[in-house]
Image (tube, rainbow, N blue to C red; front, top):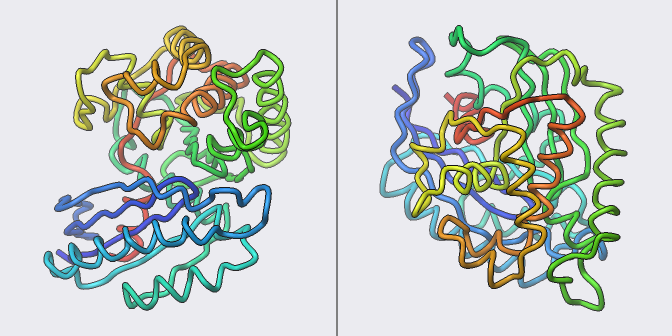
Length: 313
């Protein structure tokens, strides 16, 4: 077994997984998994730069993670940075701060690399399931981008497109610095148009229509799944590999888009950092299901973090 630390820094959150991995047997024993909403991508779509306050929130989380990595004695660490830091003019400020705190340089990976890690993490446990038809379509709805990957045991095609819950919220729901709450029909239609255009782009590379099982990753999907189950509190074990029908996704998306900030915040499973962006995230999921004809989504709590961990091991 090799003890590894994997860090995934996205547009909305930064996450840590420490695990013992055995590549020979395919076993991954999770020791610690945590997530912090840091909103690194705050304003990037508008300014092209990482905001100072966003960087400081991210560095604070890195300091916490450094202590956990040291305490658990991870032998190797890999830090992967995704959409927001790909887009930012001042990405070197981000890189320098991470190196100072964690001693490793963040790898600003491409969207295609991100998709490959997501696919490996999400499907490693599903590959032998006889009740799930192949090929899989893995969809990772992040803050700034969404990754689409089609494959069986291995990736056949992948594409990253710039529609995520934070990017869509900031682009279409913020007026004069304030989020419209709840959004208007016109704003919802504008998000829809962006997502449909992104799906057109994704389909040029990824055969979305050939997929037989839709696997959904990341916070927007897992939150919708938690709401669908009516959980009193967020329960990863109950959410992992649960299935949510198209009808339930459509119903929950409509409810979230019609709700006020206070009503969304009152949902028991809602992370405070997702309150303002969950409506856009759910709408992205709904549009994907409609485009692909998926009658349900299989929800995975294992995603890019697990793929990064396997790559280190």
